[in-house]
Image (tube, rainbow, N blue to C red; front, side, top):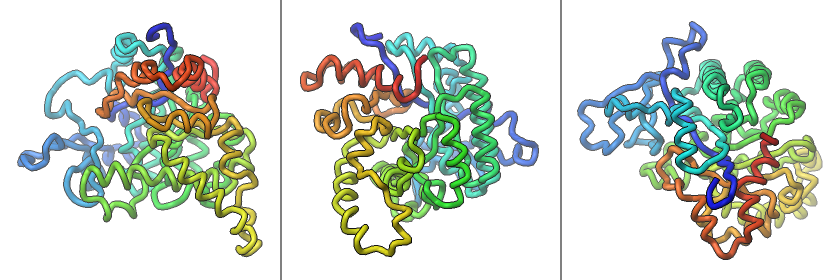
Length: 372
């Protein structure tokens, strides 16, 4: 609690750790991500360590597809990272107490979007993470909640992963903006979405450099932040809202995490501008993939949520666009974007009412994820 406000951190992270893959199936165990150190890495700044997986190191600081994700720093520093990885979940709880956070929602490293092009191996990695985070958070389940990874590209494994994570106590499912090179609405995922609709879990779309075609366009960390890690939000938005999935699944709750919220104005305006004309001119067979609701109606449905930035100058307009019950608070802890004081930044604002602050900091996450 901070200044009398209860705090529900809707988007925090679990940095990668070798313990996540200890119970992978034997056929994949030797391919697990391994911490690797570059010995002649003077030009690589802080990125002299990474995870070596299927002959590729992530994150990497130079070359196509680079990104500024968290490397396995303990390989270099040899320090205790138990809280950051939740290998020591009690240490994470102590961090929550220090930060004034009552409940924290945990998401995996965004590196899970990039480790392999092999759907079977990806499914093994995803499900191993789900089992790991379920074990680690179980003693603290009132304060540490988690989202389970869905290996969409493997239809059978995606349904098996959903069934397993429901038994393990997941409070949401997480996907990235694309499933590798496929849109989330691809027909090959239809059976999964039909099954997922029965689970009643919220679906979280998390920022990550998930679309490989962007890699050749990315030459700097700024490129990564502005292109490969950001634009998949718009691809997921089209897939989930622009192709009518909120109509098809009337109980589906969707949240976009760590993409910010300003881009919603552009996407909603552009899609709603074109929907009427496109209905008139396109082949009738395409109508089945069109939304019945326009985007602003989707926003006002009470089923669409977004994690914004607490210093966002457009927050007042975002609340007007979405409604007071849809905006979420996140710290992104333990990542380095400087959000540890984000709650204080929101509380210091004079253009947001006390009631709106309480909703963003606690009530809205409860509406999305369910009561504690």
